[in-house]
Image 1: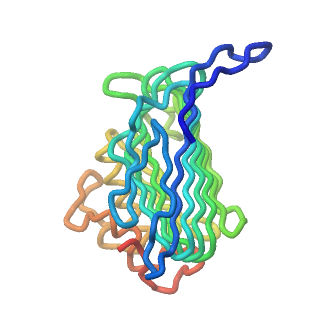
Image 2: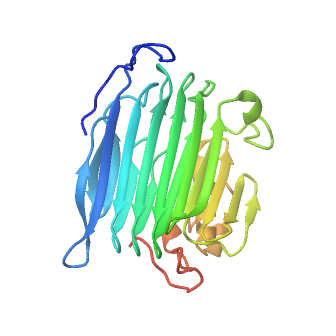
Length: 297
């Protein structure tokens, strides 16, 4: 789908002229004759530009500023059964102000026995922006997923804009996780019950199920009621945030040694993020507790 800049209709209740961009990107995998993952579809348009950087690895490259207020962006992922996909980005995403609210909708379907690792760089909320991030994740039995989201509240020395996030995950059509968060209200952000003044926050959803909850300074690892784990972290900067999230990811994957790091701001000798999908426990939803070691090689 090419990028376009339509105008919203004028009239009662309409915002008037709108120069927001509409763009879409899509990735789809297939199982090759030799049993290896092949990318059967890679389609993109600025600012969502996709570049294959490995056999089953794709990086998102920002080829235009944004998202800006009024932009509507879509990213669709289709991971076929028994295939592997890793999606990262080459740099942070800077959300800028404009006319109205910008929106990024990410939809992903992960087939039976497939593996998905979604690890983009942080989203930075510039002053004055209004952004909406929606994720819809559909899992089939034996799917293995690590899905990380990081948000930085404003650039250096500026107040952040506003952001609403929504994450919906289902397993075989049944709800697994429903989560929504609103950011950008100074009173709420400063509350000890929300951010307590932290400038960075992140969440990782894993199909691996932590054996027990873990709560420490700026980090919470919480097993879900059905299966899977949510890791949440707060930090003063993006480096500390990533360290805490990776610590929680290792804990959820059964890496007790990696989880017991010398300090929240240190990576330590065993600080390898790839182990988050190949820990001592099974990281599939349906295979909880079998002791297998699936993961991206």
